[in-house]
Image (cartoon, rainbow, N blue to C red):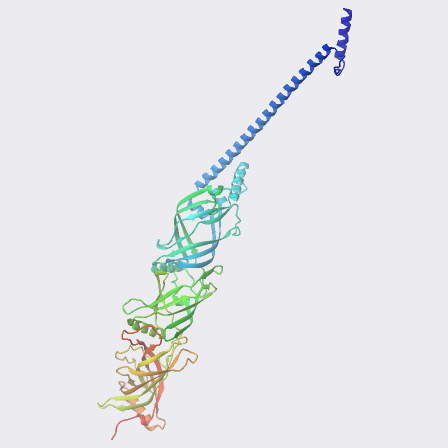
Length: 622
């Protein structure tokens, strides 16, 4: 009993002390002791396994927590983006086309227009301009500095989205352009257009992006509507138009975008916009506005030089004109070769096409544009001679000469205008005289007749270098005692009609000579002499009646006295008009009989002298 208590006490003391490591079992170790040691190791393993399971459970709990937290956060962020996108979409859905055009779209230019091609009744042009869309203003995300924190975050997210989007593309239906009178002026078509978008743009135009857009422009077929629009614009000092587009499809990104940007798309219907472009003052023209009428064609276009040359096959035309450039100095434009048909009024109020010309390619220059043209005379019908003769006569006598200009590419578009006349009236007939002139009384008594050879130098205006053959002339002459006084030219007398004498009869005029019919003429080419072609023309007159003007018998008697008693004879002044019938070499028309048709130049004024001696008076005294 005492021994047992002593052993228990020892064990008790050992329990309070530091545990000793178990001794390794040996061959001498008692079996009970080994079994006891084995029992203790198995319990420790179970404790370790339980601890490991608990740790794994704690790790899974943490992972699940992190996953759920991350998922929740993503859902919150996604919902936030959805709410932001919904708010921006709601803003965009409330944007009207008028707001988009007036507040969002900013356009400067055009800076340059290149005409690429003319076909199918319209023009393909390439337009260069500067453009930008203030998307921040449209959806209201531009910075203003007066918003709260959440508002600033909302706007910042919107500006970030706009920057990521970068550009938008638009596909417009046909654009219709009307005048302020609601008259269609033309249509414009284009492929899809890419436009840059931005936020917080500066107040100047430095943020605008240059673009280059091909456009197909088809003007109206009504020339009168275009002329009226130009005239109204000039009177009001501004070109006012209304633009209508039935539909516009817009989407994010480039025209060929396929990513997330293209998913953002919008459709606008029935867009209308009014535009008014003030007309700047143009040097050399009246200031537009204040009901100022539109300048005439001759004020805008001046013919600087032309050259008409004939060959046996055709008559070719070359010209240089100066056109006032109404565009601002910042605007550039290139125009390729364009064909035109020039017509003149016919006798039956039907236009007669007389020339086919084309312009050389040109660029806009300031203040004027130099335009070079070339072409040829078209084949003419036999009944065109009268119309062409009247045109030539009007040109030479500085009369109004209406013409019409049409482009074969736009058959229905015809512009009526006037062909510019020369600055001064050309003096075609020079050095007019009657060689070997003889005056004698007629057998009927009381009258006189004249004979001789009419001579003149026919000098065409500068630039008319064609060859021609003068076939006949019809002079109408007033004869003066001495030099012709300083008088205005006689009125134009139409061929084959009774002569009209000037009223009152000029001083010292005493005689009137006019053949009853055309006189056959012969012409010889005499070079150009620094002007147009020059020809020496002669025509014989034989016993042509010479009328003593009413009340001028005294002047006639004084003239006869000078002829008889003066050793040098007497100087007679000649003033009048002449009709000239000519054949122009290479002019492509005939009269239907195989003979070349003649042009008649009517009422050409002239002035000259002739000295008559004693041998020129044949009174027939026995």
